Image 1: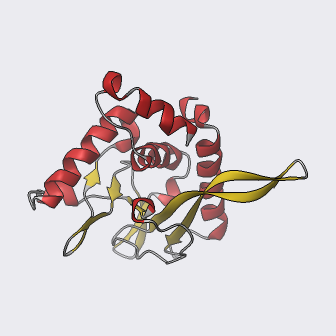
Image 2: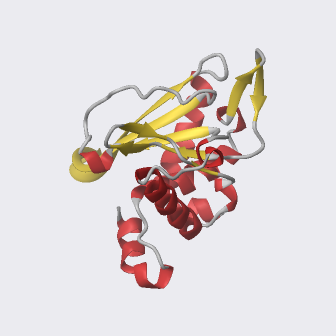
Image 3: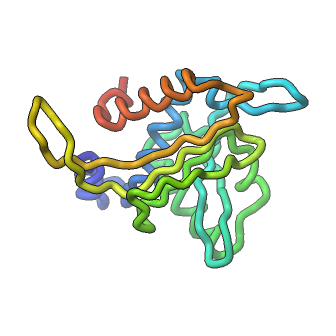
Length: 191
């Protein structure tokens, strides 16, 4: 939360207002570089690990859902990702997305945080032919124990839904562990 607040304060310098979705897409794309099995699909009954990291961003519309894709997200800066997501979401709401802008995804993020979904634990449906989707909820202060003391700390709920034919729970746990570490210590994303 502190990172985002600092980035929001720099909105005029950056030329965009950084959202949690932007930060998550940026972080996930970089984490996927080290967890390529998570960036895979089943193609013709074979597991295909994708070289490109193309992040789907689930976008709620009045009459449903659409998933625009940020292509090569791991090669883009946080500002580039932020601007592209805003453009894609605007085009989605105007029903002006091209076929290329909604295809080729290799991993999807669905962020229900802005909708107030803090402690609901729904299971997101995988956007086929991808093998995984990460659902995140609202960041809220929760009681946690740190150094033997109960303290309030901002907590984000999340749920990774994945195709067990492509990767197993150990791979999923390592991916989530890396993502949590990166989000808790954002300087790791710069290494």
